[in-house]
View 1 (cartoon, rainbow, N blue to C red):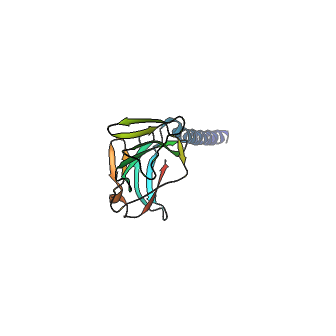
View 2: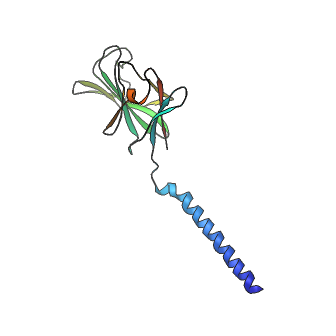
View 3: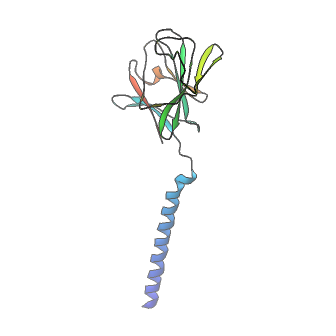
Length: 165
């Protein structure tokens, strides 16, 4: 009887230790892997997802478009910081409605290849929404890759950008 009890005890102990070890490994896995962050573009009203693509390690992406008033290219750069999106840089060719005409303290303005570039911006965005145009074709840029919003979502759709793991 004692042999049967000690075999049962050994088997039970082995099983419990195996379960605890497995759970420990599973719970520690996020500590040893870099979670991939995905840029999601979805309908701002229905949440239908039109685009999902992994971000690079720096969490940076940009959106470029033709300005509706001055008809020149604008590119806005965003970065994920502590789970929030921030506008950190803007690049444009000329002034117009809705384009910065002054820089805030700490920001810098420089000229590069015919563009004005404002850097050191740090605007936290509670929401990032763009309208997919009918004439203008906004572009999404992640690293060296570019996507046309008009090919991803219907024209005149309001799309919201979020980042998820």
